[in-house]
Image 1 (cartoon, helix red, strand yellow):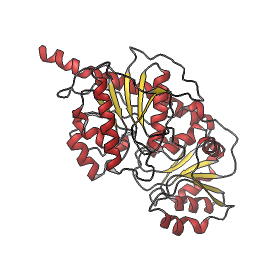
Image 2 (tube, one colour):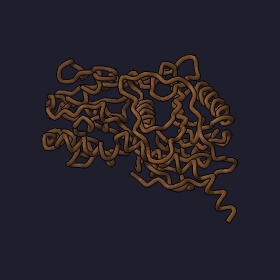
Image 3 (cartoon, rainbow, N blue to C red):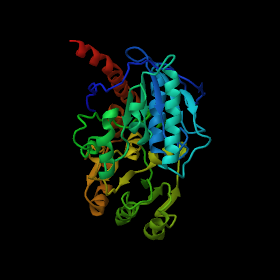
Image 4 (cartoon, rainbow, N blue to C red):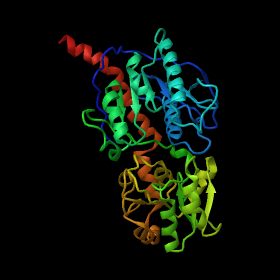
Length: 395
């Protein structure tokens, strides 16, 4: 994990302290307090408006926000979660839209409406007991408008830097403190943004069981797209005659690929498709798998499914793309390979991987308490920056 350094002060930023609004919901997991180092912070956590938290099924960013929010509350911070309707959290929950929009992800109409309403609430709070920091996971609107509010904003970059998004961050990145999720992702960041810390996505290890006695099947889980490679996972598993379970959501525009490349191989025996899974069923599927296959052909900025598998002691076989080279220790927690043939050969070597080594790596790098502590340091650096700037200006 990279060292978090203070960010430069921005114009028209005032050093603020936060305000929590909304109501606290009960959870099955206890929301016990385990105090952080330093004064508790008041954090406005800005989640996307698309899917409720925790996500009922597929929801990568929502899972990250959920785990981080609960950990911050346990550590004694006052967190207000601005999120989609139907969300449940130990934090103070504020829902702003009338309904969630899972089938309209990245529709600017709903993102702008959600962020604008959240900023209105944050502005109201500044007149009383304001927030110390806003943590934005919402996409692009929050960052673009970050200089319209007085509360410092931390923006986690959840997606890859494409030519289009790189141009956006080059134009607006100075308005907030940026945080990446892997070194591979940040390698393609536009020049001129300065050093950006990398903080991995968190997982709450308490919710993921370690299982050392595995089943006979391999697992692939993800979106049904060519770059995610379900068809390549099928080829690798069939080459060594090992059963494969495919799980995941077929999103709009993906049905034709599924029908052409995946469905003809699904026989309910050697290749099974179980659709979208969540909750305990998802955790059990990960825990009992012999290994997780990640035959991706794109620069994956993180790859949460790899961390979820490793948390259960399930090794990962991945192509050498994107963040896979950071999340998989070749020969220790799985294998890094170049193609389907090498993936098939690595499947035979899976018994050499020790399940406890897989989980230990996650505990050290991605457990939510480790990640929450890193974000605490980031929040304090951002909140302190305006005051530091004033002191330096007077010298």
